[in-house]
Length: 354
Image (cartoon, rainbow, N blue to C red; front, side):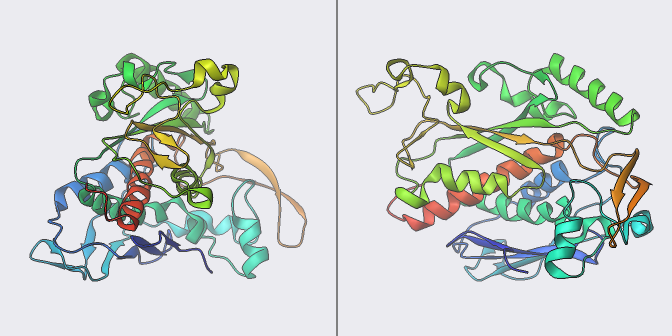
């Protein structure tokens, strides 16, 4: 299996399966002498871990990261950083019923056809549990990106949308509720809606908005390596993501060019920011902001029809512990992937001071 490494200079390779002994990764290309805040790294993992509230999967994992290399006396050494997160609460028996059949809209069928064999326990390598390793790498990338602030939040669940630009919100409220929505009234409504969806044995999707502030001018390369193209790739590599839009996004098609153009101030900043902080694939110093759309989780705790390995139609039912809505736990994942992209481009252009 290829495709387990992300990045060009600041690179992370992840390993492990949902129900294996551990998941983890190796970070290569991280600069030396970065003093690490281990509590901050663990905090990001805690924001992603299962079992943290009534509206997420009830799998109980401490998700405590152990570092094995690349760090000495609290600082990075410049050598590969190896780490692992041990799995402690697997219930592999919950997946015995799908050993010889395929769950709709999962990777089961294509994994089996591509590799001729699959780990059916919790989806194996295709499980979103792999993203915990990304969060570790992203948390370290954040500490390299001094001065750059990256914050994501839930802006929509199903049809329930904030309907406001991020500049109109108090983002400091994001972590004050289980949904991670900075509008407390809407967060309460979203939480109740997710609970009702869970009660029905169903799932619902949502949107996460991410903002990166204080990004210096010059990150990104023209033509094929545009900054927004790499951010799009990063976001679309996250489990359950179905869409990515930055700046004005799809709403921009409703505007005329004279309305959409970001006029300059004398200092080079712009009066508006429909460009989303990126022009010609290169950061322009304004806020970078984008939306990431997540589909409803494919596992529903209901009866459904599918096929087995022999192509026979069968009836079965979803089992196990699953998220009724993935977006509350995906917030730190979106932040992590953003940090990995920005760190990689910063190292490609060392003339830019962070």
